[in-house]
Image 1 (cartoon, rainbow, N blue to C red):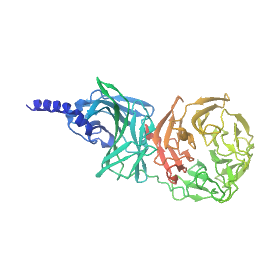
Image 2: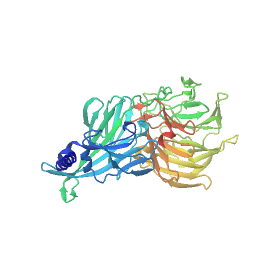
Image 3: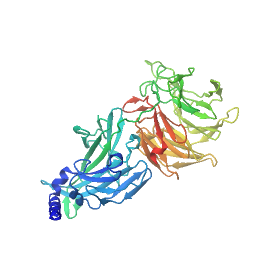
Image 4: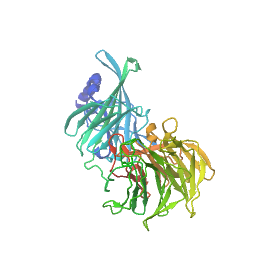
Length: 537
């Protein structure tokens, strides 16, 4: 008798499926949110169980697990009140489903209904990254923390969606609802340590036919089951105060050194807005920043470590007061600082003034790439050659290397003995995400893969190798890693404090440190942020 009633209930559920679909969505629960550590799929109003018979309506689901660089499909079985799967990834990953439910008629309108569900296996905010595959998951919600606020970015076909309807339930709060702004963002103050059911809606006017039923539009619903950490991770390091951009930074021994930089408002430079600060912070025993003797003011300089010393290259000087018209001059000076003696020594200057460039050491060779020469109110000259000097020689001798581009505000790094140049602002054409690779042995340039993101992600980035892996940090907060074959970039983390014109530095073979920079939303960033490589494996 009980079995008969379950069959009747199932038949009724199928008969009224359109009405159920109006209030039910597809949800994935995994990681710390899962009651038994497995992956659960619910068909419910929120990320919790509902009538299990409704699950029979979800035929042909493909549950996939995304880790940087690959997607895996996970087999699904039916459990007591959910569809169940087992994760194959021990570390942080993203579980997702994109499913076509069917053509639904409501009143006089017939539309195709599609669900796009997602969940993260980790509550670490840095692991909350986009799947970034428009075909596999066309609509998705990407969260990040910004102080006491939760920022939800809705992506449609990998592009921020303006005007998307966002609904948040759970966490003991009344339902929150609103639309995304031009950045595709919806910002909410959500208490930490609670679970939330978040969904976003997007409709388009696509017409078609599904199983013989014509429809005039498509409705997409993205869902995200999200648990906010009770105690969001905080750096144990004192902030950079004041915050600054376009500065020099390097790690030597246990110390982080910072030099110069821009203190003022964006795009406005003056003598007062330039920093002459030279300071260091003990990373093993962080207490307070130690002020070192003041130095010549520089902005847009490069600074690199080599054999226990720090090399400072170029930068510009603002020769105008705050109230005066800008008068900026790129410098050609090069100097080395020895922490053992606390002394700066001037070295052979560059052949011409250079700022908004970057530098890297490969072996004993110091490479200086990109930038321009600001000449006060005279014409600015974009550099069309890189420079190299051998630091093992007592006197530097600069040699010119032709380059196939003219860019500034770029980043450079070493990767398997080669020089990788990433992004930048072009002399013509605006910012770019393109990469170029120089082979010092063959003295040849080749094209590298473009980094992930829009053009502005290539502007003011920072790059460095960590062990054998090459990473780049971009304005949107995406931390990207070059694939081992050098063919593409994978997003492996999302910074809590997105920044550009900052410095990303390797502390050891496992950790990166993000220092300074600015956000388009909140301005200068004082907080230092750690990232550990183990979190993306």
